[in-house]
Length: 302
Image (cartoon, rainbow, N blue to C red; front, side, top):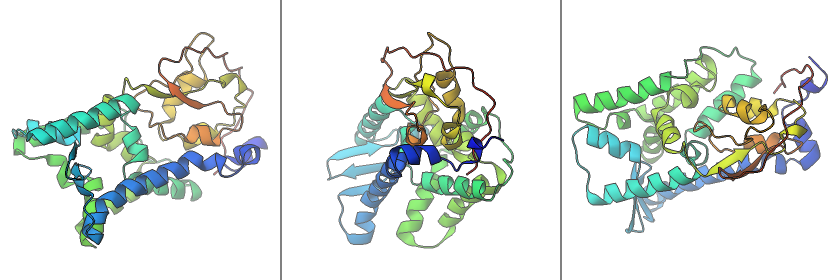
């Protein structure tokens, strides 16, 4: 392992850009997640009903309906035709996430994301083994199973065990079984499968990944020729396989990260000292020189 690889994660980015700039998207995401969560808790906690409901379905200022399309489709599979406002709300949400990237829900809205991020941070700190890594297709089998159960039971099956819904219930009604589900996700990512829940199991993330496969908002390795092979971007990315085609592509290949698995979390932008990455759009036609063949490099320690 080289001396450079022994540096803490994002060390060079912090030295080059400062601590705040090296964590700006992480901070923005935490603020965004807290904002959406507090909106739903204002009513139950303080009687301020700007938003009624939860992430599965809500009504804002008694006017704007928003419905999780994943919930709507389960309802249809269960044989229940939703009311018009629910359909309208699902179309609005689908249009937004279809434009900016479906899995941006996972990194900027979902309140379980800080739980899984905390589990991954502790996992790395304790230097635990990577653990069982389900095959990439496992998420699609879980996704299909949710609809199969909805059809067989006539219910919106996932909502009975959805950790997002359970977390909301726990915060509203206090300690109870709901927290067991959230704790189970944390333990699963900590000791069973590193980043396993969001990356390999969660059917909600699977759905939004499919929904946002053609999204306009994208991350691009525009300056990939400047990459110093520190591997920090791979260390922080929740779906590191999406980086390789863009960063290590040949001359003439696109530097855009086009995979629907990308969560647009922006952490690769944060931790990159030479500023290889940036947010752009899928129609960005700028070319990028190929990254030089790297010399031997190790993986950063966290």
